Image (cartoon, rainbow, N blue to C red; front, top):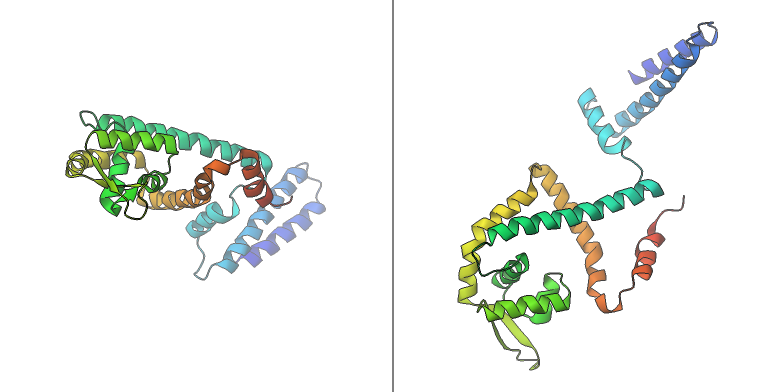
Length: 242
């Protein structure tokens, strides 16, 4: 079918070449566009194992042929800024919802909650392990742990291997506090997911996991981190040569 329509376009162009119509230029432009569509249609047919149809073709165009190039510096820069901006926005929305969910609880911040959840789910950890697990800078993490110990939510014991280190575990009081706010925090999670479909949420989780896998090793080298050097080695050196 595509081949027959392609022949029709060629015949029409030959007719136009012998025509004196004033609309010749605009029609030629239209046929150029149609040939581009035909090229895409031919590619679509070769890639599809099932019989082609219009709905499938439109879906294929959206996913494969019409995606903007990530290689263009202006587009890449704009997209990167948007990713950073919306990531910050999402963090602020989550904190806003969490503040209301924890109203009346002795848990002060979202960090208080996730530190306890980590101990509840994965068992005891050292202070360093708990802070790194929650992707937080040491100074901020230490303050969270101090607050949880003060409120009796965390118990600490000496590490049997390293006497200088303390091992942390969630206390019975801490468990009770987690369970008291758990339903509200689940509500927060659902609000953060917003109006995305299940499929969109799964796709977003995959993309966020990919970004997390990229950033986590960088973050764990906090003491030796250099912004310019990291940008050069991980970003600039990976860009395709145009």
